[in-house]
Length: 509
Image (cartoon, rainbow, N blue to C red; front, side, top):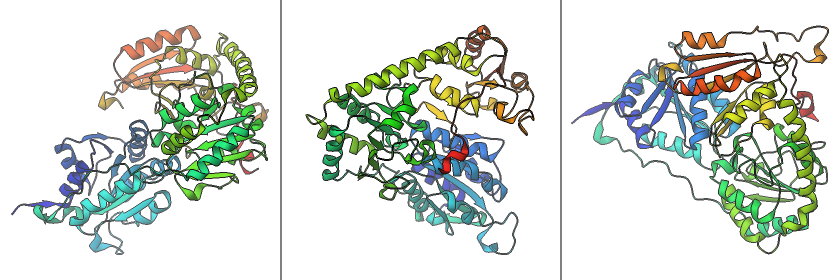
C-alpha cells in the first residue's frame, strides 16, 4: 500500500480546492509542498520577499474574485507575510496564507525559528488554525477556503509544523473534500426592502455608495440595473471602481464632496462607514441624512453611523430585491433637480481639472501625466495606483470602466516571470509633495532624489523609459507596451504639486 507525505497531501488538497496559481518564497519546511504543487500543474510564482508574495496573492484575488494562495517558510518567512495578510484583512479579501513552522514535537522548547505563528496571525485573519495530523490536512484546507469566502470575505491562515509535513500516511486513508463553492446568497428582510424603497421615494437628494461587497458578490449588473431604474447618482469605494463604467450619466466623480455633504438619503451597499468616508459623520455627511445600510455582516449595521433601515444580506441579492421593489414606486424624474445640480458641478470642476491636465510647464504637474496615461489606456486596462500624491491625483483624473480593474493601494498600506506589466512612476523626488506647510524647513524625510528607476529596470532585463517633458509620455508608453516585456516609464514630475486629501487629524472628528 502506497504512502505519501503531509507535503504531498497539502499540495493535492490545494489542487482539489481549485487552486491553479500560488505565490511563495521557497524555504523549509515548505520545499516539498512547493515542489509537489508544481508537479501537480499549479503555477507557482516565486518572489524575493514573502511580503511581495502576500501582496501578489491579494492582487490576484481582487482581480479574479477567487481565493489567492501564498505560502512561506517558518519563523521570519511566515511573519513576513503578515503585512500583506493584514492588508487583505482590511480589504475583506479571501486570501489563504500558509506558513511552515517548527516541528510540533518541539513546541515550547525554543526550536529553530520557533514562534507562535498562530497567535501572530489571529488578529489579522478571519480564521487561523494549526494542523497536528497529516490526515486532517484536506479537511482543514477545505475549511480554510470556506471560511475565507463565506459571509464577509477575508484572509485565513494555516500553520503547518515541519514534522506534520514530513509525516507519512497511507494514501487511501486520506479523503479530499470537493472544491469550495460560493455559499447561497442571503436575502434581505422583505419588510426592510419595502421600507428602504419608501424612504428613497420620499427623498429629494439621494445617493448610492457602493463598496467592495458589491464586487465580491458579483453584483455589478445588479447595481447598474438599480441605478438605471431609479436615476439615483452613485459613487464607489476604491475596490469597487468600475462596477458601473465611470462615464455613466449618473457618475459625477468631480461632485463627490458636494453630493456627500448635501445628500438627504444614502443607500450604502456592501461598504463600511470607515475612514475613507470619514465614518459617515459630519462634516463629510449631513447629521440628519437618512441611512439605508446593506451589509452581509449584521454586526456592521449601525457601526460608526446610526442606520434608519438596516438590511443584512448579500449585496447582489439585496440590490435585485430593491430593483424589483422600486418598480412603479421610485420616479427618476423626482431627482432631476438634484442630478442636474451635480452634473453642472461635475462639468465645471472637470473643466478646471482638464486645464490643469493640459499644461506643458516644467517640471511637469502629475495631472499632466495622468492625462497622458488616461488617454492611452484601453477601457478594459487594469490600473494599479499607489503613492501619496499620484494616488490622489489619479483617483479622479483616471476613470475606470470595468469591474475589478482598479487596484488602488490598500487601506493598510517581476522580470523573471516575463509578465508584461507597464509601471509608470510619477517621480517627484521623494515621499509626498514638498508642501507649503513644511516651509521654511523641508518636510522631514521627504527627499529621496530622482532615482533612475528606468536604468534599474534595464539592468534587470526589463524595458526602461525616462521622461521629462509632456509630449514624450505617449511615445514612451507606446514603446513600453510594444516591448512585450515588463517595463518602467520613469516620469519626472513637480515636487511642489500637492494633492488635496483629508488630513489624518480629521479622521477622529
